[in-house]
Amino acid sequence: MPIATPEVYNEMLDRAKAGKFAYPAINVTSTQTLHAALRGFAEAESDGIIQMSTGGAEFLGGQYSKDMVSGAVALAEFAHVVAKKYPVNIALHTDHCPKDKLDGYVRPLIDLSAERVAKGENPLFQSHMWDGSAETLADNLAIGQELLAKAAAAKIILEVEITPTGGEEDGVSHEINDELYTSVEDAIRTAEALGLGEKGRYLLAASFGNVHGVYKPGNVVLRPELLKDLQQGVAERFGKQDPFDFVFHGGSGSTEEEIRTALENGVVKMNLDTDTQYAFTRPVAAHMFANYDGVLKVDGEVGNKKSYDPRTWGKLAEAGMAARVTEACANLRSTGTKLK
Image 1 (cartoon, one colour):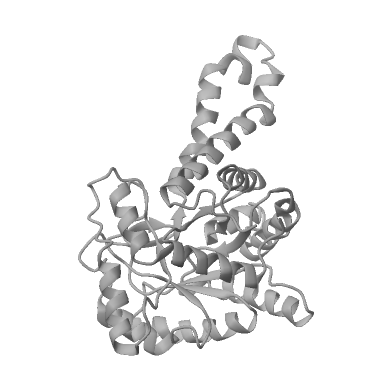
Image 2 (image 1 turned 60 degrees about the horizontal axis):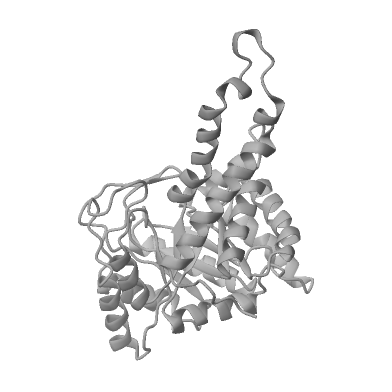
């Protein structure tokens, strides 16, 4: 199927919210990891979200120029071509973008999509993320208002992060402390500034103890039940039931119960990067160790071309990452829910 239109993406999110499931949002950094994500979604018969961080886009732009916009555009255009061969709907998204990178990443990409929409085409990306968690909430929401208006005009959904996620990702870092929990007052101020859909649709990355990186279950204190408090607090103030579409960040090491609670309270998107990076790299490491005398020209020998051919270990990497994406679909209850 082609990359999701704005209408299809909205329907995907609506169905997830109503059905108490969420889409894995898989970070990619190459055409190969893109194919791995597409394959995983197809094998799970789940629609999904594929995303690029600022660091991922910079990597895609090549190490000579490291241009984030050209890297993101190139992979997005590639995705629009190859996604047609997979029987699922895929939305393209850009991940965490802090204030100092807006002018070099999200704003130009929104402008590019606005140009496409003006010509009667669909936007290149279906959603973009503004990460203002390092700013004061007032400044965060002020920038959010500007970006939401531009995104809505380009038929794009905005994702906003209003309070910090712990750990570090692409240079954005926060301490792991009691500030990692969004308050009802934070949520009310967000609704006041950004509306509840009438100013444009947005996804909300609220904090309930989330931490980026690699952690075993129990090492991070997640409180996904907090999301219910946020929904109810805003519903009581504005009279709209379950007003937010939540995003689950920093999900590595989450327990099944934590994920289930998050889904019941309005999470429609859950980011996966750390786990899928490992799933991609692990088969490559195994191949290199098992075939070291083939991938290396040991003791003056010539090695084994079939062992060091990137297609040989690349296929293993794709299969490993695809399997992890399929597993994520099962954990998030999106398996078998693809739109027909």
